[in-house]
Image (cartoon, rainbow, N blue to C red; front, side):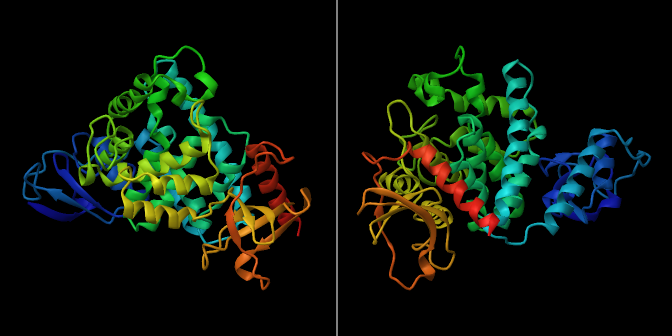
Length: 423
């Protein structure tokens, strides 16, 4: 029997079925567990939860005699107290700092978040490579920071990851997928805790590559260049490592294990199909593939972001069509970083979205196909122009006197926002 009680009435031996409050109100990864120790009980009572729902079929009821004295509060340096303080501080900052801002305003924050996130991920990955147990709690705050950035501006963090060269592939992929997952989950209007957990799943999807039997760096710096059977084992290795961490939500575990399943049943490792694949895994398959297509491998050339969207739409049987539609609405049919041809025969790169008119984003023009020369870079808000300037196609930059795609993308993106910041 389920029963809601005040947090102050909670006792040892009770089974917590649900927390009445937000994710930032408590320090626990899951909400269903038996209260077996005084530190856990004290942590709940010190949290900001309003109430809890207990399951009397699995634990003690209110009518049961309380044989245990009320526990003392944990010492200031206990793990529970430290995490509660961290959650309260992070929550307070985020509640006051998630109002919508422009791309230009958010880029500096996004860059700082990326730098801090990379440091946390690097330490966790190195520890795992050295054989230490994976401690997800040390990287978990990264998701909260990314989520706050995405809510201030949906394109800034992902756009920066897509257009900045100085990101090692494994870290860039993890951060990019995490940002895409929280943005997609937000658009799908999932519950707040699920949105956070989707971001955590995205961050940890490929954690298993750390445990692959590879000596040194992978070929070309990309683990997907490994033998297919070796590469595919990363989902099982990652899932096992996350299970050993203990207490992670099933949503995160499912995302890690099943993000290479396909709707037609031709994926791995379990060959699940359709709705047998958890929603988080269907979301992760889309976000992960989008990032993979833009990175490429030794055998598969990398694609422009807009071309990656087209390629995914063409992969019949691979993705949940409704979730893919919402994903495209999230990143845009022409995502930030896409090179396009304008009706004026100029080449430009998408540098921001237009929320009211997704097919007419903000672009930075940099080259004239008519003259075959570079032009003074300039910003064009296609939806606000009166000259009927529009996108006519995705650009093919081969054969032009231009830097390599990824270098050009960084140059155009950063120069566009440096000039905006000075304006």
